[in-house]
Image (tube, one colour):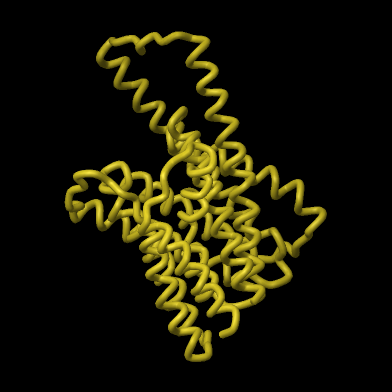
Length: 298
């Protein structure tokens, strides 16, 4: 029961973080928003570490740091594939792969359920597809490259869950601190390198950057930074719940329930932005609740 509650709650919070991150990415670059979010998450974790605690061990540092690398790869591939599109296919594909990889690993490692539990896992995967579906008019068939990036992103998200599950129970927040430190460092380095490349290209072409209305641009950037900071703080809470769920229950259950993160995004978008929730997404939300209930008794 506890695992199901933590999994669904974490998924909703993950989706909320994605919502704020998406708004931030519209105002500043997606990579910069991710880097700022990682920094914010690291600050929150460092403030919480003395309270929650955690033992610094080689295992906690290694697996936590390695999960930061997979997280950076996952985010980069995710943004790349969604930019190519269509989102209606690539978004749920990424979510399903992110659930199947750690679920398979967990089952191979010995996770066992009552018969209803296996039915629930299958039902949950269907819910992931329906919840993650993004209706698009005139969506075209995705390219092999886009499909490969979506699968790669999902696999890296799944790898993050597997790696974080290897950390010792007494490590507390240490693995997440390492995750954010490594993730943020990678993303800031990427942002800096891209900025240098863009500057070099402008210099070669002898073209000055386009001038915009300074005050408006400054306000937009400030808003984007604040949204990215909020995204990072919220995302840390979701990661903490994920870690608690994995340590309290089964990796396979947590991976499938966490993959329902688009639910948090679409619900928040409906409340804040008044966006319409598609009937197929409502069906996914209902199936998700049903699957969580079945897992709770499995």
